[in-house]
Length: 119
Length: 261
Image: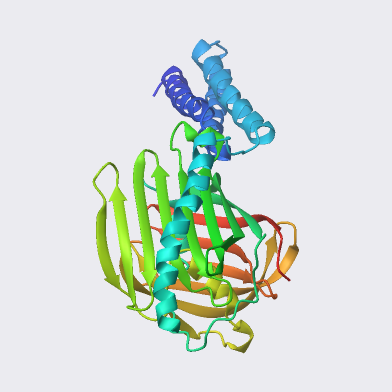
């Protein structure tokens, strides 16, 4: 196989994993999204080393690097600076309160039954 | 994918506790608040998914004072757009014996709605169960129960009142728990003590219990579903690990306040 073909194949693989990592970096998956990006970086490195022998410049190799690095940066930033928190949910809070109010009637029914046992 | 985090978490902990002795609550009281982080195992890494809050409060009816045991599970904001969970589990129990009188479960998981209510009739040893799924009409049925039948929430608090210091590793306990309007038998095995790292408490000696259900469709395998209770007077659930059909779930204590002891 020609060196050029190997470089292109490796770059495509790098791009593929880089793009997956890039997409996942916008999801709340924590460090999981970094894994495909690292794989993308590994393929880029091999592509870069092989390509160096040819002495030619290929834009696909550079693009693969940029995508993977971006994915890693976004994932790392999200993991460090975006803290997990539960959104305020007024509707849910009201539902919780209402549930307790409604429970009182049901409890009276259950406790009446209990009183009969005790008697 | 219906994760039912809180459901699995609680479920994996129990159901026919053939407890010969009457439970005498010395482990929790009104005002106790426990916060947990629920994580899901994906691609060899744990991903934090939701927060679970467990709270004990006092409730006064015309004739009795009870505890309201409230468990709320909510997904983190970042997950709400993909799979929003807002679950509420409540159990109203006797303050001394943790005997349940009313259980309510309100599930909203990614648009899946489920409402369950059990009103205990201890005189006739029956439960009036009301179940409503999605927008279907309510189904009401009577379920025969055994003398020590708990629900998914009260059982979590009940096991905190068992004396584990007298148990040997390998000892089994059976607990009756009402799950989906059926009395299920859960076997709990005492597995000894283990020291684990607990948020805010450092390294803590814990009682390790494993939980198994007859039916493997909810919980997988033997000794794969474990709960660690702090080996002190409060016996707080510090860590829960469960194997469910869609993966592994871990629930770890992140904060606690208002402890009884």
